[in-house]
Amino acid sequence: MIHLAKESAVIDKPLARSDIKIIAALMTGYAMVYMDKNMVSTAIIPIAKEFSFTTAQTGLIMSMFFLAYSLMQIPGGWLADRIGAKRVLLLSLGIICVFSYAFGFVSSLMLFLAIRFGAGLGHGGYPPACSKAVAENFDHDRRVMVQSGIMTTSGIGGLLAFVLGANVIAINWRYGYLLLGTLFLIAFLLVLFLLPKDTPIHKTAVKTTTDRVSFKAVITNRNVLLLFVIMLLLNITYYGAMSWLPSYLTQTYELSLGAAGAILAVNAISQVIGSFFTGICLSKWFEGKQKPFILICAVISATAIYTLVHIHSIVLSLILVALIGMTTISAFTATFTWPQRIFKQAIIGTSVGIINTGGTFGGFLTPIMIGALIQAAGGDFQVGFILLAITILIGGLGVFTINPKAN
Image (cartoon, rainbow, N blue to C red; front, top):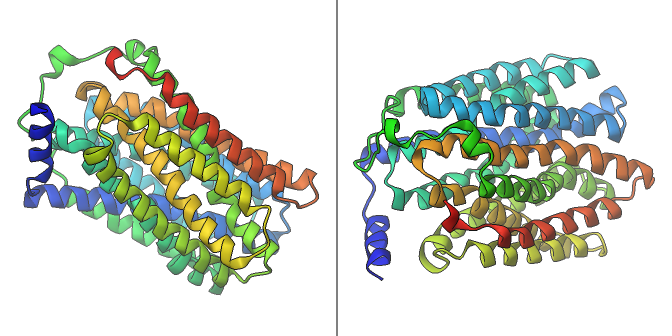
């Protein structure tokens, strides 16, 4: 009880002005990261029409991004632990900025694949470096709340993609990527000027000479490996829904890109709400109870996805899309922030890099798998979406294999 009281006191204490600047910079970068991830699923519709790409080819374009994203997670986390978070954040944002501009100028399948692969390399360093920046700059008891707050940008980025991005793409998809590149440039400048140097500033910082753990010890840690698999399963559903909901809605209800974007904006708003309340729930009411929280979210999400493809009502679809957005991001956020609670500061970057590799590998597999299933089913989304429901349910059950005390 004393421990909980102290933790509550730390959480309730107002943030310093310097802390707010750090959070604002990290949130801006993350919002752009999620805007990019979401916007491609809308942009791919006019791109496919212009260049006569099949669903398998468009799925491959989206998957190449996640392949590179997966490959860079572990190196990005390792670099953040070794050279500091700020350098990796700047490198990541700089790379994404360049490839975002480049995407707006290409006209062949091979170049689309190559540029999305390059953008994925840039994206790969951001999540582990961001987690490392939180660990470097905030006390242990604040980290889950701060990280959850930052993760609300998944919805903010989605909102930008489906409202601002979709409307620009409706004019010309190339303009959308010129806009995106400019926004990444702004995020780069904010991180450059608002984040402190790569030196831990919180008073509870520990000496890396005593706490440093070998890479082998981290990558063979049982909880790290289990969280890797769980994130893989959760993100198959998260990225599957993100990638294919626009196509599903436009085809099933014969909607325009603008109308589909408006519905998906509701999904994005629900993600903001889900991320925000996840941080509150885990810090206030579900303290140390991530397992039941994640399972509850997984069950609700699986039920909503299954129902979505068995109804034909635009109103009910709107409600279900919002529910899917809220519960999938809540399950993801609770899992993604868990390392801040159970691992040492010295290995946060590496452990998050390894764990998030599972998540991004799920993002790589999903567009290919779902695209192939849809094509094999003659354009029917039902089998693909049922697969998404099953995977998040298995991931929700998988959290009960984690033993936080083992660390």
